[in-house]
Image (cartoon, helix red, strand yellow):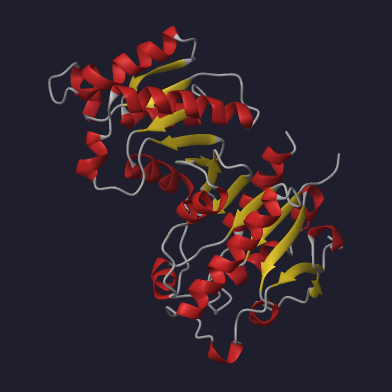
Length: 329
C-alpha cells in the first residue's frame, strides 16, 4: 500500500513547533507509514536541528513528490519567510504570525490539489497572528476560511477514546444556551458521518449530560429533558446508533472502555478535561468536515521552553501517525 503524503506545518517559528517537528522526524515509525513533507523555513529548521542535537540532512523540494522520505533526511518546502537575525524565540512577533499563516495556506493548497493526503499541524500563537493582522486567530478558523468550509467538526482522540464537541470557544453561559434539540440532533448526524469517513462504522455513540447526573429528570436542570433526550430519540428514530444523555462523570470512562465508539461533549472544557487528564501530551485533535484530513497536537507554542531542546515530541509523532492511519483506511 502506498504511503500517504502528510504535510507538516512548522507552526510559529518562535514556539516549539520547529523543535517537535525535527524530533518527530527522527522517529523511524513515521517513515514506516507516511511520506512527511515539512512546510516551513530552512533557517528555522536548521536552527532547531542544531539546538536539538539532530543531524538530519535538509532536502529542499518544490513539491511533495520530489521528496526522498527516508530516515536521516528532512524533506522541506522552504517558504523562506523568516529573517533568522530578527527571530526572537519565545516572544510574540508579527513576522512569526504571518509565517505561521503562510505555512498553513501552502499546506491547504497542496491538500486541495491532492498533492498531499493530510495535514499534521504544529502550534500557532493567537497574539502573533493578531500582530500580523490575520483576521482568523485559530487553526480551525483559518482552515475553514481557506477551504471554504462551514463549521468544521473537532474530534479528540486519545488512547482510542474519541470526543466530539457541541461548541468550542464560547463562554460557558453561551455554551449552555447552544444545547438545543436542533443542534444536538444536527451534531449527532454530523459526528456519525465523520466517524464513517474515518472508517468507524460499528458501535454506539453517546451524548454526555450537561448537568450533574444529567439533571436527575429535571430536579436540577431541564436541558436533558427538554433538549437532549428529544434529540437522541429523534436520531434513533432516523436510524442512528446513539444513546444519551449519559452522566459526564461516567461517560468518558465508559467510552475509554470501548462501551461507546465516541462521545459528544456538550461544551469545550467537559471533553477537554477528560482527554487531557487521561494523557495531555498524546491528546490529538482531528478536524473533520474539511475537504482533507487534518490532525494536530493539542497544546500551545510553549514560549517559556521554546528553543531549549526540551519540548516533548510525543504528541506530534502521534498526530502524524494518526493522520497516516485514517488516510489509508
